[in-house]
Image (cartoon, rainbow, N blue to C red):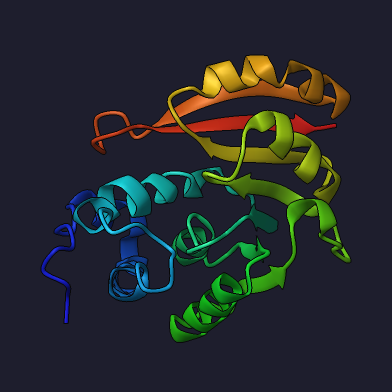
Length: 210
C-alpha cells in the first residue's frame, strides 16, 4: 500500500523512465516504506521524494555512456539504483561502506530484478576494482575537493566524473582548483538539467579524467 504522505507521482516521471516507469515506481514505494526505518532518508522527505530525489537522479541518465559506471556512497541507491532502472544497458557498481545500506542495495536490486547492478562494500578511497570505471558519479557525499582525489583513481583515462551537486557547485569548483589540476581533469563544466521540467534543476559537475 502506498504511504499517504508520499508525493504523488509527477507526470514527467513517465517521460524520464519510459517503459521502466513501473520499476521506478516500485523502487520509490519501497524507499518510502522502509527508507526512514533503515536511515536511508529523513522523516521529511516523503512529500518530495519524487521531485527532489527520484527525478533529480533520473535526469542524469542520458549522460551515462554504455559501459560501467560507479556510484560512490550509494546509500539509498540515489542515484545508483535510479540510474540502473533508467539505463538497463549500463552496468552500475554501487560503492557503499555501511553494512546496513549495502544489505538494502543488494536486496532492493534483487527485488527489482536489476541484473546490471553490482554492490561493493568499501569507501571510495579504499575501493579495489578489477577493471577501471568508464564514469563515476556521486550525490550528497562530500565536497569536490575531497571527492575528486578519492574517485579519480577508479576511472579509466578518458573516462568521466559526473557528480550531482547543489546550488553552491561553482564555489566548490573554485575551492577544488588544486585537486582538479592534480587529477589532470579536462573539459570541466557545470550542467543544469531539467529546467522547465522539474521544480528544481539538477546541477552536475562533469569532467574528463585524462
